[in-house]
Image 1 (cartoon, rainbow, N blue to C red):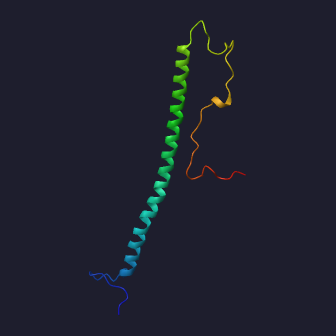
Image 2: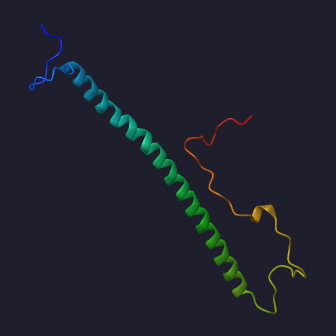
Image 3: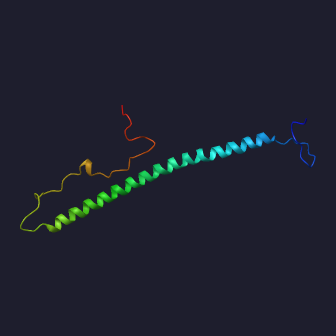
Amino acid sequence: MVVFLSLAWGSGKPLLRLRSILFVVMLTVLMLPLGSIYFFRIYENSLVRQTEQELIAQAAVLAATFRQNVRSLTHAQKPYGRLLTTAPAALPMYKPVPPILSLINPILAKTS
């Protein structure tokens, strides 16, 4: 029996077996979900970072709004807090906070 089928036009080039074609198709069908899992893992990680960035921005707006409301509620006769003669130096806790959450590196990873 002939192992390979020949083309109908008589060029003599061997075609692939049916099981080889089915194997390639099945492998492709298997790789689609695995590739999409990898893609959605990266996409989910970017969504988590965007959410964290939005929460940081909302917290900054809330703090500025609260500070402005406290300033507007105080009276000239009753100062709120103590008066500073010079502006305080910038503390490291007031530096911008970049989003650091990552689903690739777990939050509770052991640090050594």
